[in-house]
Length: 574
Image 1 (cartoon, rainbow, N blue to C red):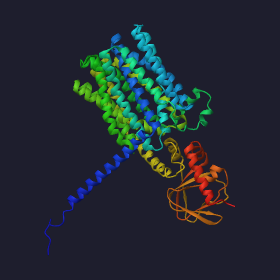
Image 2: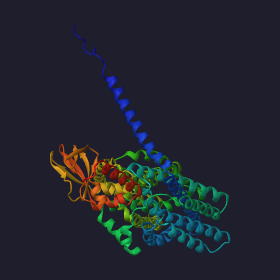
Image 3: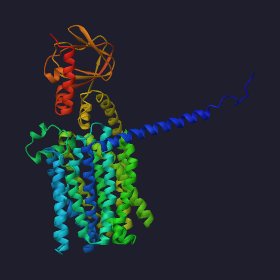
């Protein structure tokens, strides 16, 4: 019987349904990974407390910034706002790199505790000075001291987080969570300042900032984690040498330098925003002094919403691409505010800035941390924070000059265009860097199958992944012979190998298995022979890289001892 055209089974609808089901399942799987990564921040007592300390510190900073900006505007207009911001930031920018090196010499949470206590004392003193009507210059002077003390905070915190994380996903999620807290502080701090300014005086804001800073210090007292080995730091005797080493690391890593240069364009724009928030609210949109807090809080609202979306970046292999987009959308909204100077549009566009900031926190800090060497991580972040302070100060002081020259709307167009332009010029290099990091992540996933390496902090694992060399061994050939000198640890990427002791087969190894650790960790000759049963694709780690990584961290060292004891129990050469 002939079959009429179109009378056969309808495969289009079931196929479409299957595709939708696949997409839904993929989305659920991705969300499950994200949820698990974020939950790991909550389950870890130390990571949880470190994150809350950051939130308290940044709430304090945003409240202080709003309170001090209002004080400056009352006493000198927009120019005073920019000048006070520059005076606050410049000394910290100079001292910051040297202060940050302390976190490469001592436990990093102790640096955070000291910063919180000093800043709480400074904010309390500022409140007292205001209440007794002391000269305004004394309030500014104490604000400068608090800023100098606080400059290395983010550097120390950024260097601390990787020590509390064991996988790239957990580190990315930690930066996502920190971005969420940064976003919440950007919302809570300005709103708190706005309410306190409406009900009281700037002194009330300074007291609230002091209490938040004190809470930040108390949260990180006595964290429990393994410090990175200090062998490199011990050989450097001065802070100057540490700073020089950090500069060398930046100069030697072009990709790292590019990311930091883009971040500096964002922080320059952030400095501009400090002035624009006051001028737009009071002069352009007639929102009054409280409007400064409301407009800044709009950035916080966008940042909170953006943080929820940024959580999906936990499993992303395109962090550099997202980083470039976040830089672009940090400046573009300012251009559009200049084109559409309306309250509703301004609030929405400031929220876009906050959204971009959330994505930048999740992507940028993760990538920078993974590219910088762990033993000088605080020094590198200290240099970065110095550049942040300098560029924020430069943006703050330059904005009033540009406003005088081309007006508020013209200055929004001119200064807001910087970030989008640089992001577009850097786009291809960011995409290439994504590809390079994706290859490294694939190798890192293989290393994480090795039990003795799994407990290592993510930055140590990154260093191991970058140090891998590929080795091919044809079937039937020996990787090494029993009794030979051992200088290399191996992980099997593909193929099978047989372990032989005194000529007898002991076990068979496959993809993800490792061998060669006994000779390295016990400093003895090879206890067995390993021969390729099939063509072998291996990743090799030299002794100088493998031994310090495993022996420098207690959990990894303990796991390695267990593995070595188990294998020697199975076979010990005569």
